[in-house]
Length: 350
Image (cartoon, rainbow, N blue to C red; front, side, top):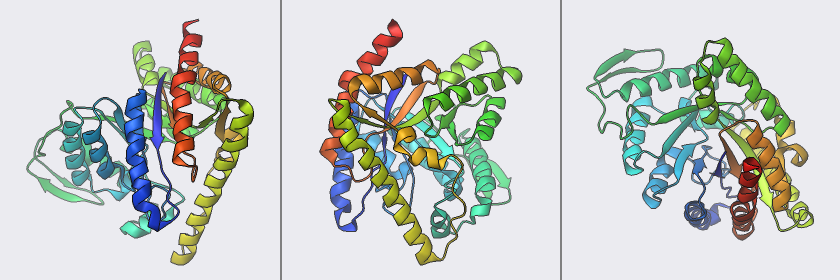
């Protein structure tokens, strides 16, 4: 199982944005230095929940600053992006990174409605816009001239330049927050990104994912290949002892989700937006007993070993929980790579 860092840094105070961005860049450096397999970037707008805002723009800086770690999007909100601009930008960044991009895409947020409002997009159109945008981006990556007349875009392009460094195009993966969308991807023989779940739910979903692929006619070789390309999210805090971890991790985790709710509700009230019902499974994700892996290296390693046993190919880990200080979060990252990962690998070898 591959291990990665989800860089999703909050900035509560606009006057600290510059300092927070400096910390983000230091975390990029540390992610590569410690030997993580990948670094993932998210996308959120207007509320400070994600300080670098746009994973496409920020990935160019990450690509120029690093040389080894893969750079993934978890996820780019396709409904907010022009597909030709997206194709051009990612082709360029594919060159800068020498093929290290993992293009994780999704329809867009289904609870930060102001993301859509700020970009002039009707959230009801998000799913259709995302589908059309993805198809256009894939077509553009062929490098051939084409015309397109669709519901949201009418285009006439002489062909994309630069063409992709990775042939035929960078690796593309979709987010699937619910079981139904995961099954649909399985039927289409596509890998997926799984939202934060317990190990038991992850095991059930990975079993269903493999079963659905087999029932759709996929070979065992394809099932194994695609399972290895899937990633699962986790929030993690590691300290020297379980007691120390429990004294810091859960409180930071709860404060992170409380602050996000405050920010979203404030912007929604200012804009007069109906945020709609809470997403299915959200209560579980914001509960530290089910949404946070927290403890000593041995405790966290045991949870990671259980996750590895599900067959999922990689884990996307949020280490810096909300307003947690940079130093505290980075010490957790160091302990994870120095003490947790060797235990997980030893358990697998045994």
